[in-house]
Amino acid sequence: MICSIDTNSGFCFGVTSAIEKAEQELQHGPLCCLGDIVHNGQECARLEQLGLRTIDYDDLRTLHRARVLLRAHGEPPSTYWIARQRGLEIIDATCPVVKKLQDRIRVCYEQHRADEAQPPQIVIYGQRGHAEVIGLEGQTNNTAIVIESVDEIDRLDFSRPIYLFSQTTKSVEGFKSLVEAIKARRSSLRHNDMTSLQEENGAPFEYHDTICRNVANRVARLQDFARSQDLVIFVGGKKSSNARVLYNKCKEANPNTIFISSPDELADQLPQLDIEKTNPDYRVGICGATSTPTWLMEACKALLT
Ligand code: SF4
Image (cartoon, rainbow, N blue to C red; front, side):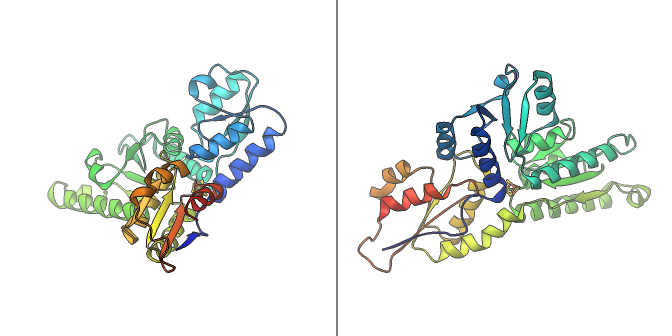
C-alpha cells in the first residue's frame, strides 16, 4: 500500500495568516478570538492550549479592555461598533480577499440604496448563517438576500434590480448555474409580463464572481489527486463550508472517498474500509480543505502506515 498526502491541501493564505497573527499576539498576553479561528476543531484545540480563548457575541458584549482577534471570515460593522463601545482592542485578521468583497458589497449598497423607483436587491450566493456571510450581510444593513442554491431563486423579484455576489468559498459551477437561472427568469418575465417600455428600461442584473480562486483552483488539482487513488480520506471540519464543497468534488472524481474530522474518526472507520495493506500498488490518498492543518493529515497517515 502507498499512502500519500495531497501537497495542495491545507490552509489557504487567509487562514495561515490569521493563525500566525494569533500565535504572535499570544506572546504578548491573553487573547480572545470571536468564534472558532478556523472551522477545524483540532486546530482550535491546539491554539486554545497556547492560551487562545474562543468567545461568542454574548461574551463580546460583556468583555472590557480585552484584546479580540477577528478571524479570516470577517465581521459585520456591528462587531466593530460593539468593540469600540466596550473599549476592546481589535486584532483584525480578516482575510484581504474577504475584506475586498465586503468593501464591494458596501459600495454597491451605498450606491443603490436610495433608488426608490427601482429598489435594489443585493443577493449573496452563500451559506445562510455562515460567519463570512453574516459579515457580508452586515455591509448592507442586513438587507441582502442570501441564496444557498438555484432552488431558492423564487425568493427574488425579477422585475427589480439584482446585484449578485458570492461567498468566497462557494462553487464556481453553482454560481454559474445561478446566474443562468436568473437570466432565464428575467428573460421569460420580459416576454410574458412586461410592457415594451419596461423592457427598454429593464431593471439591471449585475453579477460578480467573487469566489476565492485559492479555493476554486484547488478543485481541479484535488480531483486529479482523488482519481489517482484507490481510496481517498478527506479530512475536514464538520462546520467548514469549504470542506463540504471540496469533499463533494473529491467524491465526484472518486466515489471511494470518505469524510472524517479526526484521526479518532478514522480509527473507528478503519475496520470497514477494506484497505489492501499488503498490495504494493494499492493507493490511499489523504487530502483536506483550506481549513485542514497539515499536522492533522499527517496524524491520519500515521494511523495507516
Ligand atoms: S479561502 Fe480565500 S477568501 Fe477565504 S480565507 Fe482563504 S484565502 Fe481568504
